[in-house]
Amino acid sequence: MLIKVEAIVREEVFEDVKDALNGIQVNGITVSQVMGCGAQRGYKKRVRGTEVDVVMQPKIKFEIVVTSEEWEKATIDAIQKAAFTGEVGDGKIFSYELRSALKIRTRESGEKAID
Image 1 (tube, rainbow, N blue to C red):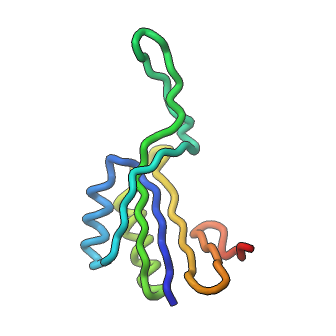
Image 2 (image 1 turned 30 degrees about the vertical axis):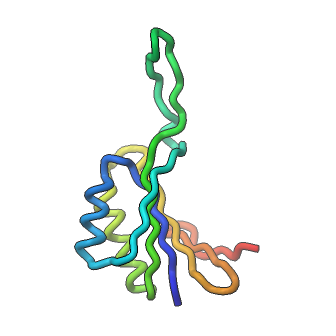
């Protein structure tokens, strides 16, 4: 069984998460720069004398494929420990079981079937 773990974290914890994954010997990591918004809801910034609402925040998305539920748990735990800042906007972690019927599993909500 293959499981895909996707984690979206703050830019400033990128190196910490990468080191944590290397520390537990996770191979095959894909990293992307993404933009998004969530509970942070952005901030106000002055650009050329005008106040602008910046809603979309830059984030880092990790995509990792692991071979078992034990690796899934170890990977998610490593990411959570490395990415935790205690502030709003620490990010989200999603876990997908890769087989003919796609199922999405999240830490908080259990398992849901997707059509």
